[in-house]
Image (cartoon, rainbow, N blue to C red; front, top):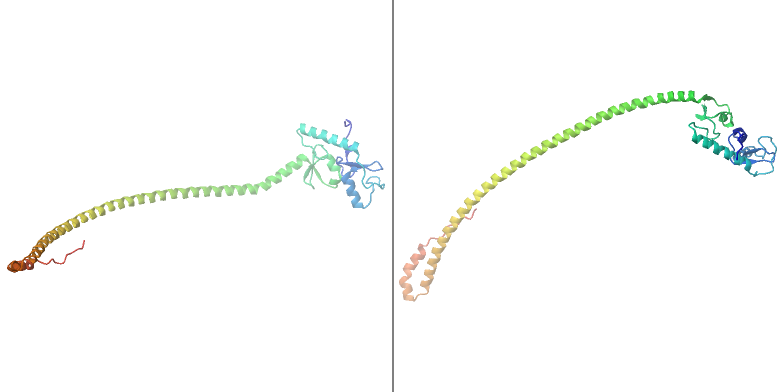
Amino acid sequence: MMPLHTDSKDLSCPVCHNIFRDPVFLSCSHSFCKTCLKNCWAQKLEQQCPVCKKMSEQSDPPCNLVLKNLAEAYLKKKNQSASAGSEVLCSLHFEKLKLFCLDHQEPACVICRDSRAHVDHKFWPIDEAAQDHKEELQKSLKPLQDKLKVLQKAKGNFDITEQHIKTQAQQTEKQIKEQFKKFRMFLDEEEKTRLAVLNIEEQEKSQQMKEKIAALSREMAALSATIRAAEEELKAENIAFLQDYKGTMNMVQLEPFPQKLGMTA
């Protein structure tokens, strides 16, 4: 269990000044984040302690389990405190974010201010920085708000135009339907009139044809009777035939030949 008197400074890496992450220790007893130590050695091209400058013979220093457990317990406790409280804490040091780094443009705690990551940086109190940045954001919003008003006005005009187009289309549609309704009524009446005229014409022509057919039928009957009589005479004995010849010829010659028949409807 982590001692009650443990402070974040006691659990901070001498290189990054943040809470230890995977701490390792050298033979000189100094501890560092494993990544921080590897980076220092890579930059200097020698395995030297960043604090006391003593050379290390170990290329892969062992993990400082005690320090690791203390750091993890401290972070866990700070995380629980942050969850229970209403204030936002630094994600690295779990201290209150009272400052704002103008160089990094981010909130910071007092430990962040003293860390190597913020050397020669300028800080403002968090409230002053927030007020200043709110005013700056408000100024930046002004053109966007003005543009939004212009767009809203344009949209309003478009909406009015769209409604006018719909209304005009509806009125035109109504007119077209009314015109075609009248046109259909006219066509219906015209159809009835023409059919009536056609019916009368058909009846008249049919009557004429019936009369012509009746006349032809009478002529055909008379002609057939004459032909039959003549054919009977042809069958008679010679003396009888010759005795009736003159009368038969008169009957045949008197039969009028049909005039040219008009077949036009």
